[in-house]
Length: 274
Image (cartoon, rainbow, N blue to C red; front, side):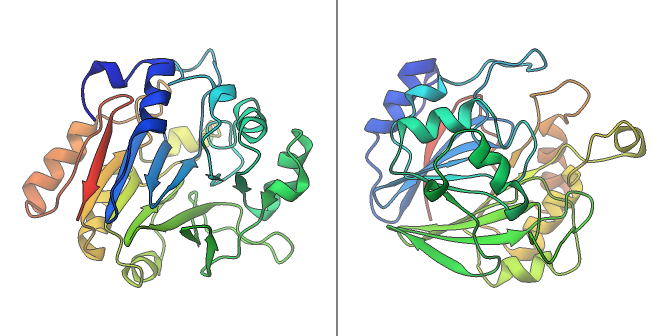
């Protein structure tokens, strides 16, 4: 799944639909920022699909949201524009009425208010595996600088552990390090981890831009957990809130040369086999 022909709008989407993924493999496509498509065991999972045109984007949307009729699951990590996209999410839900849309409890009312049928929107329990057809999904608490929690709505920021066809993938959502995260992940032994690298600092926090792991923290976590393949994400979409992925690669090369990593090209897809 390489070459420019796989990276152009509707052509890319048709490639995703047509790609046959063998048992024991995962198809992974990066749509920019934290947006991914994961395919395996006959199921297609969209994670944080950010497909709306927006004046702040540095790169255009991968394809039109209303054309996404192949989603079996849509996993949303938290209620920020580039994760719960108010234009793309209802368009995908309409085009893929078979898909369940998973969101944190605090976001459910707003997502239903976007026009998505209430029975299509699911608030997953945390730290419990739930099966959706051939996919098993476990929501993992995420700390978007803080590990927030409310008794009424639970954790407002989530990551997801997804099992498909015997393989395990972890998408952290927007997340900084917190005590216990590595231990949670070690229990799942992810083959693939999608981790943010754009970091956080006092200036961005002061301006209301909530941060994520630094590239060092992402690499350290992947090493500590023993991730099979680490893919950096959440960069290159918004000016002033990004990080060159080469910094992640250089750090891994220097400190963890045995750690497998892959920097995905824009709209690239590839098949992962353990």
